[in-house]
Image (cartoon, rainbow, N blue to C red; front, side, top):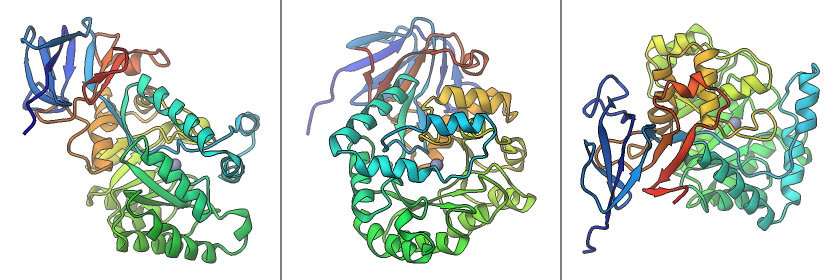
Length: 392
Ligand SMILES: [Zn+2]
């Protein structure tokens, strides 16, 4: 048996968000005058300030929160699509077709180049407070290129998602069903052991409900967890399918019918909102207020990708969720922490209860309200992942 390692206390905290109602006030479990004691990458105690420990990290009177859980990103890609964004701001609609531009650039990139791009984006996310990140493939769209993307993603996170069914690649134009056959028969079986999840893009111009159902069914049979992109560009069958299939999460949810909201409220499927996407594609924002009021579990994620949402900033998403989606600041913070953890079916992250991962954000601000109140400002003083500070 290994001896327990040294202890660290994060102290001089202005306001501590634990997300554990047993440790503080309200649903966010907010405590004042408390310190967080860490050992062996776990939270072992929340004690009054001044607790003894081998090492002390001074929060400078700032707010401390659980690290953000970004449950939806597409960080493995090469190239960018600034021109597409510029054209969109000049009035061109977003269609999703630009995914194939990123696919060409990604296929052409070396492993070393993709690995470096991915590392840079993960570092950027961490500087903005993200400590758990889900990463999808989806810019390879051949068996080998998709497997390469999930292998690279697995080097930086356990939350790896095979999104072979992102878009029909050019070489399968007009033969979507045959491409889905390839995803089900070859990509999914070979992704087992590397990917934890399978996902599909259920949208007009991508894959229809029947094609997505085939992908999810094959994923489930292979032992993968299920996620789905749905209801991004218009009303559609994505939410209903995700609930029916027992997906952990259905993501976007920008266009929801009353029946969709009822279905989400009565199911464990998390409704994940990606408001930076609606911002970047100049779309309406999701009816999040109605979803929350109906009792559904929600998450907030970045959807970082080169086409429709090129940001890794969860604080930016929180600001949008409050300003544009009418969530309270508490609801938005919870959605980006416990909500993301629920969407990834993780009990060890998204909160600072005893035994949780020692993943923390320390803000250069006295309270979490500043995340929405001071949009666009880099408020993260440092991030601890598994107890290790970003800036030692
Ligand atoms: Zn996405």
